[in-house]
Each structure stands twice: as C-alpha cells, then as structure tokens.
Image (cartoon, rainbow, N blue to C red; front, side):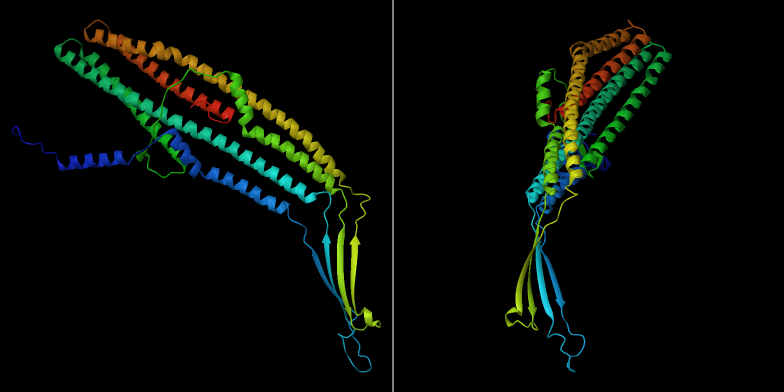
Length: 426
C-alpha cells in the first residue's frame, strides 16, 4: 500500500461493523425506575390482581340492591258447564293481579354495602401486598442482572490481563529466562479464565431472560440491557424508623386491620338479619258476576309478618362474633410478623455492610497490589511460578467475593424494602 492512499476495508468486515453498530444502537438500556414502570404496565399477574379489585367493586352494587317486588296474576270463577244451554266462561271470572314487596328493616342494605366496601378495601390491600412481593422478585432479577454484568466485566478484564502475562511469558521463553514447562503451565491456566468468561456470559443471559419474563417482554436478549449503580451505602437509619414505616405502610397489616372492621360489620348484619321483615301486598279484583253492583271492582291489601319464634339467626350471630376475635388475633400475628421481617432484613443489611467495608477500604486494593507486585517480581526472576499463580488466584477470589457481597447487600436492601412495604433503600 502506497503512503497517503486510504486503506480499503473488505466488504465483509464493513458489513459486520455495520451490523454491530445497528445492534448496539437498537439495544435498550433501562434503569430501575424504567424497569419498574414497565413492570407495572405489562406484568399479567399485576393486571389479574387489579381485576380482583374491580370484581370487589362490582360486589358493592350487588350488596346494595333492593329486593325485587313480586307480581302474581290469578283468576277464579271461570264457568266450565253451560248454564241454560249458554256457555259464557269469562262472564263470571275473577281477575286478581297482586303486587307484594319485602321491606328490609334494621338497615340491612346499608350494612351489606358497608361490608362490601370493606371487602373492596381488603382486596385493594391484598393486591398491593401481592404487588409488593412481585416487586421484590423483580428487584432480585434486576440485581442479579447487574451482578452478572459486573462479573462478566471482571472475567473479560482478567482474561485480557492474563493474555498479556502469557505474551510476556513467551517473550521470556524466547529470551531463555524461563523453561518451556513453566510457559506451558501458565498457558494452561488460561482455560480457567475462558471457562469463567463463558459462565459469566451464560449467567448474564439467564438473568436477562428472567427479567424479560417478569416484564412480559419479547425483546431479544441481545437488544435488552439494564443499568444502575452496583455499589453499597453504609448509611442506615435507626431500626425504629423502619419499624414505624412498616407499621404505616405494610399492606398485609392493613388488610388484617380492615378484616377486623369487616368482621364487626358482618356481626351487625347478622344481628339485623335476626329481625323480622314484613311483606306488604296489594291487589285489584274484577268480578262481573258479583251481585253487588258496587263490588264488581275492589281493592285489597295485606301485611305478612313472619313469626320468628325459633330462628333468630343465632348461629350467624355467634359465628360472626367469634370471627371478630379471630380477626383480632390474626392482626396481632401480622403485626408480629412485620417486626420480625424488618428486624431480620435490617440485621442482614448491617451484616453485608460490615463485610463490605474492609473489602472496599483494604482487601481489593491489597489484592491488586499483591498481584501486580508478584507479577513484576516473577517477570524479573524474583518470584517463583507458584507464587505468581497463587497471587493471580487470590486476586480473582477477592474481586469475585467483593462483587458477590455487593449483590448480597443489594438483595438484603430489597428484602428490607419488602419488609417495610416501600423503598427505603434505593
């Protein structure tokens, strides 16, 4: 190639470059807020839970419906035998339309409606609780993806570094500084780095697939990515603040308290259902054969009152009264579970932070310093091959442990968010 002439790039290479640019430009990179927004908009389980709340709203309509009136049509006095050779069946027939209506006393409709509204509030709290659990699963998948990305970058960096070591070892072999067997042993260690790289690639793809499943997204894995801080914070609020926040926001605890209110309303309804409901009726009669000319058309009315001598709804009254006590005990159990969840998650976050501090402040820097120092000494004949390989292994162990501890911290933080009922640690 003559100086000054532009370099010609083969067509196949150019096509591959353009394809790579297209893939990179089409790749989606979402942060946590965007992932959560998509999840709330697309997850089918969340949509199904929302429909249960709408069903509860529909039950409010049913609960407040009035009883339907009853319409009865009856006839009597129809002639079936001819009189004096004349058959006139309609002439002597009575026509009696009757309308009756059951009147509910003691505010039964209002109590049914209140019980249905409380059921809707319970359904809403239970839906929020299911959403809380699903968001924890989503957060776990998001953290796993970030951790897999970090481990993949570490594997790539280690392989590049080790390839550089191999190249320098070959130069030393050509110069006669090391034996062939030492160079071969160094090259054989590359298989571990290649295996770690492939495992990291598979783990990242698996984490992305799980995240896409939760988002109900059919985007190819190669075009999907997430981004966010993969680090930890050692600033924790006092435990009592997280406890109080959980008592204020935990939807399962809210549902337990709302269940007590519904049980009390159901007991009031059971007492009301033990009362007597009269049925009012009225009818109109037309009898053309009546001897009284003023009595051909008549009106009538009635009141039907059940005699509740034996059945006063005693069983339901007793059952709903017991249900109030059962609901109160369940609320106490839910409250105790809140404290247990918050305390356990808080302790886990604290433990993760205490483990991470020395890694960030000392261990990772020491591992890097030891590796570089032993590598330099080995290149100049001041360290043995075994010292060199051990330093490489220690560096990998420390770096991987640090990334895994960060993942454990983020998972513990998500667990604390789950225990509190809202995000208290980003």
